[in-house]
Image (cartoon, rainbow, N blue to C red; front, top):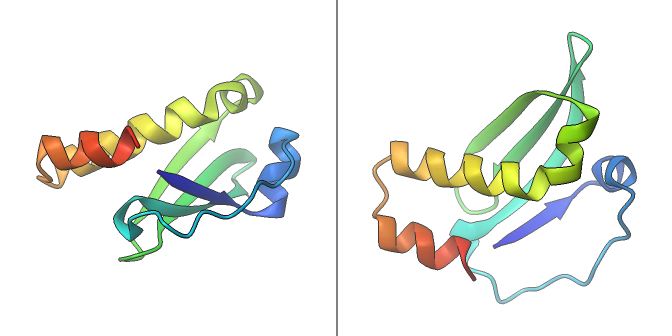
Length: 95
């Protein structure tokens, strides 16, 4: 799975940008940004293939320490709710 973060989110996470991997399946390739809505942090994820959006709202500072887990869980739960087969989900997330 490939999560491409905006500079704003990278700065919030104190992470340096890494190399771009072009071999990822587009269904498991996402862009992520952090925004403030009603004085609360929200991470907005957008799928590169179909522009599907997932929003993680109300994140606190401690949540950013485990943001990768929160993102993977949110994507997995969303795909399950959308009826995507479990083997497809596991294959894409575990890459």
